[in-house]
Image 1 (cartoon, helix red, strand yellow):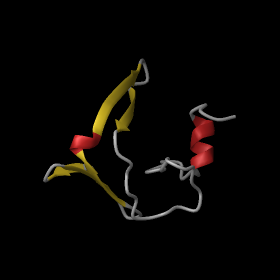
Image 2 (cartoon, rainbow, N blue to C red):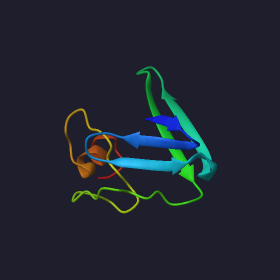
Image 3 (cartoon, helix red, strand yellow):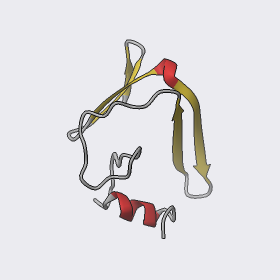
Length: 83
C-alpha cells in the first residue's frame, strides 16, 4: 500500500486498486488493547474500481490477506463478524 500522484495504491500478486485520495470520507483506526492489533476502516465517497474479481467474495468487500489462508467467510467468522 502506498500513495502516488494523489492516489492510494493497494496491490499484491492478486489485485490492484487505485483510490483517489479525494474520495476519502472517513478513516477509522482501532487499537485493540492489550493485543496491539489494529483495524482500519476506510469510508469512501466514490466506489472502488476493482481490477480482479474473486470467486469467494461478498459484494463491496475484498479479502486482501489472510495469514491463515482463510476464505473471506472464515475470516469474518474468525473475527466474529459473522456466525
